[in-house]
Length: 350
Image 1 (tube, rainbow, N blue to C red):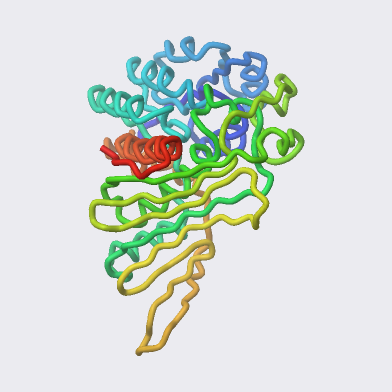
Image 2: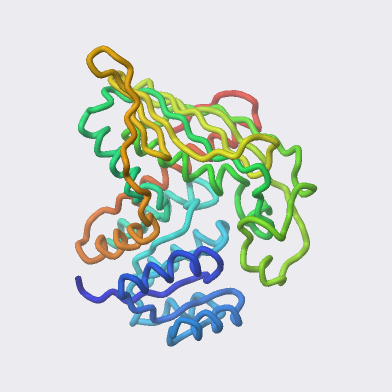
């Protein structure tokens, strides 16, 4: 693989916990970092031996020795940063959700195609060992026709503060933050059928009164006590279903805050068998008898394999597993669910 030189735009929690460690494990040179909090950028650069740090991402994009960028910034900034990066010839790995709406996602995908650059979204659950093992079984036809999927991501009290809870910056609450992971994963495992309609509903019953800034995943501005004001104008919970052109249906429940059991997982059902994870289990019949089969496949490191995929796609000129046009379809589903919740009825997805 030729050497690919990387810059990071946004060096908050996910960059520090996942992207920088993955790049270092793979031996990839990190040329520069940028963050709206310049002191944070300088601190991270010094900590990891990165030569250059900026308070403005546009300065990083001017560098000719940066081939690709990893964007880990608030959702409202994805579109301007990603388009600027693509226009300067940089390949992009962008954090989820792809954008504030499907039109922004479409414009980014179109630009990536025009520029012949890799635009990939950080939906790392597709890169886990157990999810890839299940995907292979589905593709081999072991479950028959997959017609139903179920996605769950329930936190009892796990709402982040800061920009995550401000709709103008995040685009939405748990549906966009954590729902995107399980909905995308279930849709992918089902074979990525074309979505045709969606029905969603949301609640905000706990909101800011249940928000604890001293627990759970918090953005860097909150952890570093730069921002302590609590603004919470997104949903606590979202549920509903998505219908597909092939007749299949995906149901889901996601929440940051609800008085219920915490759960994370996906399940799919087909005419010959079903499966769920974690842990990875198959449900089928053997010689006419019901059988539950546990497959001992560890989760692995989805973040590391996601980064490996990004670099390989750049080097080999191939399409990523989580490519830009998948991001468009995911955004179509998510925004249709929000519109459905607002209007109180099932709506078409175009």
